[in-house]
Length: 396
Image (tube, rainbow, N blue to C red; front, side, top):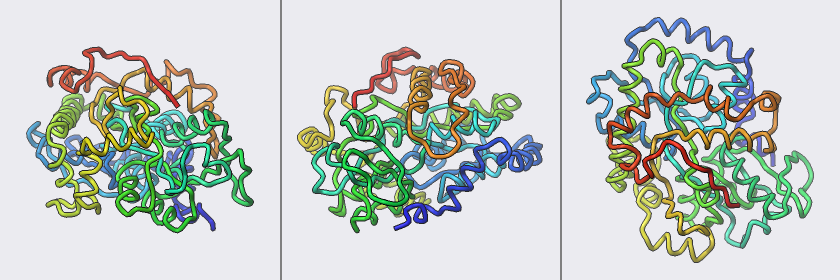
């Protein structure tokens, strides 16, 4: 089976081209033409996954309008390539992106954009076929990831190496018993591929892990948030021009998202209904019950995951997906360090020159989110110590 064809080789090639300086140039020129619109409304681009939750809630609950902003209905896109293309060309001006993709966009394609906030923490898992009992059992098998530049790839490879396994990318032949073959696959294709035995598992954002569980075709082996405590997955990416030339507008955009995250924390079941295919805006194609399993997981589920070993660090009290907006510098620094040692297909030469601390300062602009968080009651309002520094904890 040609796994790469499932994701669409064209999408992979497009995304790889976009994330080079020459490939991004025509889109950046299109953006320059559009950027003359001084009072452009909020235009959100998103994928139909729970990673987009705060942006969709901010729209659905009217938080943007409450800030005095004009906002258009969010634009649903079907791949990271489409999302990034729409953003770089200026068709949309606020997006959620996998945090490692923003590293590639900023330093690989020289996109003039910055991370302004985190969208969520956790929210992903390693789902495997029912007969798989441990990470070691993945030796000689194939696992799907959503993209090379993803926290999923970083965490998976940490788990594999901790268990004596070597990640490889083989287009022909079977992996050795000590190897695990990695393939990129669209999240929507992962559950059917697991059900048919074409892959032994996948690591991806929700609600695809919950969908596999609900259908009885897979089980959670580990949650990514149980490996890297409170890790970011998707972050909010905005054009640097907006940050510089429309700082008041940018502040209001970030205010709305911070307020949305606070609202989500207190209204998880309602959030699931709002995002579902049964909601007024039909933001995603997912059923309310599946989204509730992610956003409003019952205590019984947590107990079962602790018993199975999917959760090994119960004292962390990690939710299946959680929401807090502050982009801790230590996370970005650790992410850059780990990307340097992560198997990634394609040209990754830009990573070698990156200094983690300098990269974190250049990639992230936390002025707006700091102000928004402070106005909302500080980090304590999100259940965190009231400090804008932390130490990263990774336990594979």
